Image 1 (cartoon, rainbow, N blue to C red):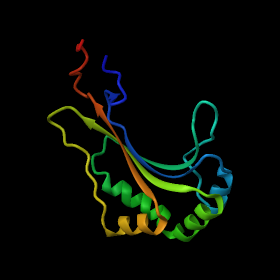
Image 2 (image 1 turned 60 degrees about the vertical axis):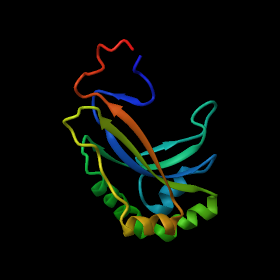
Image 3 (image 1 turned 45 degrees about the vertical axis):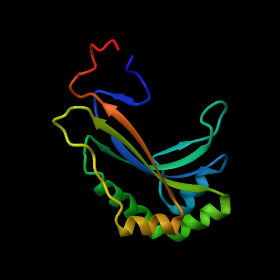
Image 4 (image 1 turned 90 degrees about the vertical axis):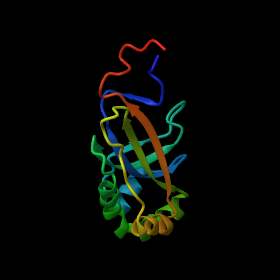
Amino acid sequence: MWQKLTYSGKECDNYLYFSFDAEYFDTKKITEELNIEPTSVMIKKEPVPKSTAWKYQLDAGSEIDLKKYLAKLIDVFEPKIDIINGLKEKYNLTTRIQFVIDIDINPETSTPYFGFNKRVIDFLAKTGSEVDFDLYKADTIGLLDNYDG
C-alpha cells in the first residue's frame, strides 16, 4: 500500500546532480568539451526515457547537510560557465540542478537542509539553469511495516 512515488524505503539516499537535457543530443560531445566524465547518461528511447540527459551526480547518502554537496557541485562547474553556455546554444540544451531528497519520518531525526547563497544564485543565473526537487519519505524506524491503510 505504501509503495507510492513518495515513499523511498527504509534508508535515506540523498543526492544532487547537474544535467544537460534535450530530446536528442550526442552526450559524448558534452563530455569532450567539458572534459568531465558524467556519472550517468540516458538516451531517449520509446517509451522511456522520454529525453536524453548527461548527468554529473554527487551522492550524499543519509547526510543532511546538502549545502556542502551543492558547493562541491558548483566547484566543478563554475569554472566551465562559458563552455556550458556554448554547449547549450550549440546543441539547444537546457541545464538544471536536481535535488533528490529523502525525508526521514522518524521524529528524532533532522530533515535535510541547504541554502542558495549568492554564489549558487550567480551560477544559476549565468548558466540559465533550472532547479528541481524530488522529495520522498524514508521510514528508517519501520513505522509503516504493518500499516494496512
